[in-house]
Length: 250
Image (cartoon, rainbow, N blue to C red; front, side, top):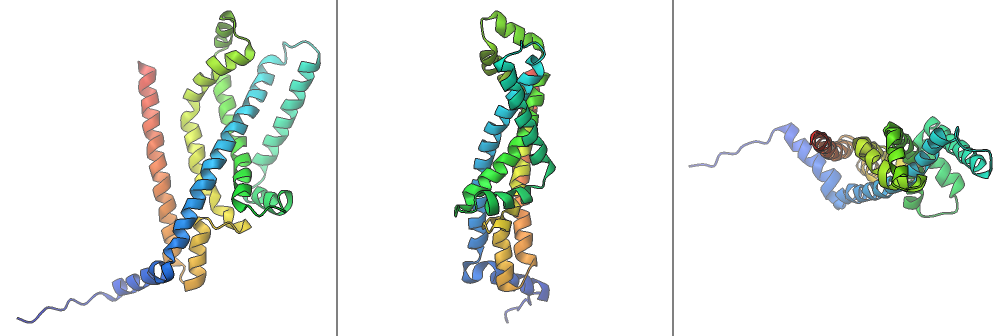
């Protein structure tokens, strides 16, 4: 009995050839793989920097809003006003300019002598994220009833101890979903790292495109990887929100 020869459709053959050309030939898939690791590295450390910076700015602004009217004139009040003014300038500049411009300023002007592109990207994205985290954390702090401050004082805590042991933990419970969403946004924002020559995942896909003169396969692959990452973390955020709602009912 003669063997049946099944002809491969022309479009499928072309798709297979495109896949081989863009990813298998010369191990070009490594451009995207290495770029993915760079993207995750920059995002992870930028989130840590953004959270730390955001908490500091949020505490300064919320403390100013809550205490400035009751403080007596003196050095403490003057320092708080100065710190609040600096925080406001920082928030205005960062939230009022595009992140890609901030990244280019950091790389080509502020850290022009540095060859560590990953570090520059972490600082640029961290400072950008910190401005948005600051407003998220501040809103969480301001949402806590003033009675909690009074309860802390009645326990013998000073203002700083009350913030650390009573206010901040309650605020974080309320803002965790918003902070997780900021992390998701930051993952996508790092795609502009190629403007300073950092070989992140998007840049890796663009390098493949420049080598094969085929844009569809590498760029669609990059888009799908971003989509999978965002869907994964979005699912984690939804699980977190459900657990927080469940814990509030108990």
